[in-house]
Length: 443
Ligand code: NDP
Ligand code: 2IT
Image (cartoon, rainbow, N blue to C red; front, side, top):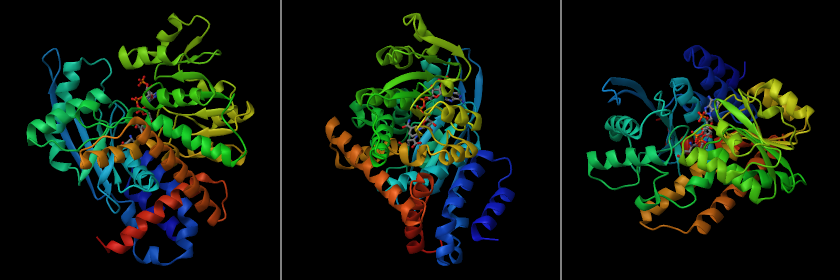
């Protein structure tokens, strides 16, 4: 058996009940097969064994009191996966589905994504099974303060710098930052995605969605296509989906769908984004409210955005939200590009089907890297005690996304898999991290 097969079997044996982590690791390791076969140094130095075992996994109790005076207990996590090329960096997810498998898959993906940005950041991820939905601001604050009461001892500007992810936005980052400062009396860049009045970066809010569109533009251009006049379907209606929609519209595309975990909207005239921002960013409401003021649009309960005919599909909600049947429907309806804003939204069989049917397919670890890239720019600004203009950050973001596309594209070509951006992203991300690990010895 090959080194990769041996290592995959070992991972499956030693990580039972971690389907998301095994899914993410399998895709990466299979892409690395030609790299491993070409040079015996990787097996000799145990690179895959070391890369797939986190540096450390922290799990803790988060006790807080709800508005009815009842004590609630949630689980908190921080997985510090790999710091070969920089301090651990990656978001915090607050969602009832969070468990160690999900945090490990996200932390593992983050290693390669962060490497692709070309910036000095290692891979980590954290979160909790706490559900912010339906909670009062005071409850969210009480939870965040209790979460930080443990997390603070594990993070630092040169150690580990968390940020947002599902369920963690500006409000949560603010409460987390306030508690860190209260406990330590230190004013330092230990989180990114901060508010602009206390060390945040302009364009961080927009970065993941905008970056996705910059990557998509580069991929389309390299394949003789463009966004102008195209019909786009997007899933999700959170941070990534909203700013993907905004940039797609600015670039001349028509976005016709968005969704949340309850249902989805189809607006054949094109999504009215200010209305969505009002519902989601201000009222924290449900996407179903969209049809109240948009009678011509349709709302449906459940899932369904992938059934709408489109040229381009942008999954921006959560993992495994686009399965094989969805991929078949998209192909049948003529989709020519799928670019991931979310982490691992396309199941492996769906991704394979899309690629086999000639669809340009951008994996999240390349196409959604704009968020963490601007987080790293926020860290730079914090270190300098300066803040850059929106245009400065946005143009750096564009350069970074173009750089990622060309790096991913040439890695795929070099290993005889031209246009396979999955293989390209995994290989290019791996090469930098493994080079640093090999230089730093067996640690
Ligand atoms: P948000 O919490 O802002 O939004 C998430 C959106 O996805 C909401 O519309 C939510 O609906 C929907 N959603 C979440 N979970 C599910 C589910 N299980 N089933 C159906 N819909 C769901 O998160 P983000 O926009 O920040 O994150 C979206 C994706 O992008 C995630 O995969 C995240 O890991 C990834 N990502 C985020 C980055 C960032 O900078 N924020 C950077 C790179 C990747 P509802 O409100 O009903 O739950
Ligand atoms: O998945 C991701 O890249 C993020 N949630 C952003 C991480 C970050 O540190 O900005």
